[in-house]
Image (cartoon, rainbow, N blue to C red; front, top):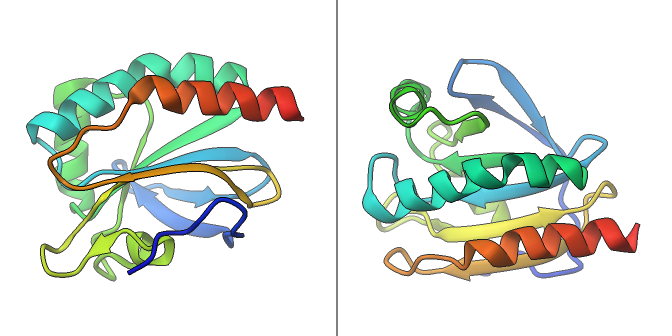
Length: 154
């Protein structure tokens, strides 16, 4: 499994968020696609809380946010309600791991995504990425810095 690299192109794709609504990722704007292994786990919860705090600054620089896990839409709804998240949690439950696999971050042995983050510009080109193993949290400040750099390059 090889994760997408900076400079790789990503086709737009549809997912379903925690409310059962279709979300088209990669359509007409820049996206931060944020993969996390499982809802209701320590590192994932803390990373998503940090993302929720970054939601407005990301929006201010023209970057939409989608957090993707292999959990079901129903589990993501309960997770979102419990944590009061105000962004899309996209279910990669079925076909299981297809979105994560497309980005090269699906761990088939464990049945979940690695901690992969991909900043994709309006032209659907990966401009920044980081991929960590399950137990290693990401530098959340680096995500916002990359988004601001993308905005400055436009």
